[in-house]
Image 1 (cartoon, rainbow, N blue to C red):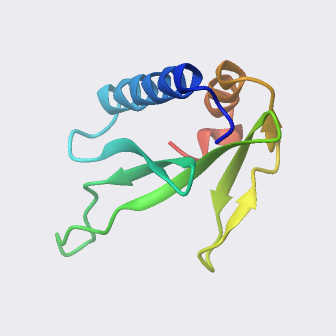
Image 2 (image 1 turned 90 degrees about the horizontal axis):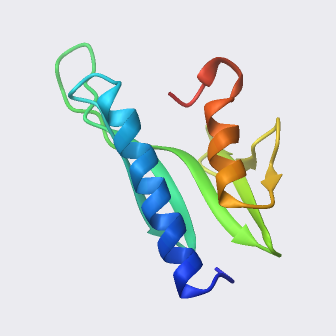
Image 3 (image 1 turned 60 degrees about the horizontal axis):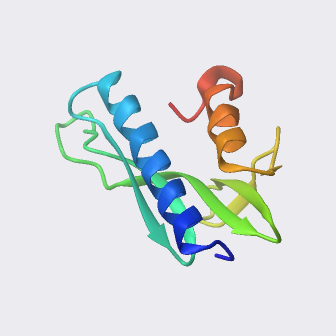
Length: 110
């Protein structure tokens, strides 16, 4: 990431707070979490169960990367690679990115 350590820390805290807020409004077994992978942030969902009661593996839902002075947003494809988020793949600042997630059509991620 081409962010200063202070900007990176701020983004990390905001994203964790965002996931914590989502956790308060969802099923207590399903948990939203964030982690850093390959110089990007991932938002993932864990704690889900299949119809036989088995725990499903963690599922990455969004990938947020800072490149070329913009935040880029990606969604996973069935093949395992990442596709730019169709409605708005880039935003200038992290606050805009979180607003975009809240306004996602049909809240497909949540």
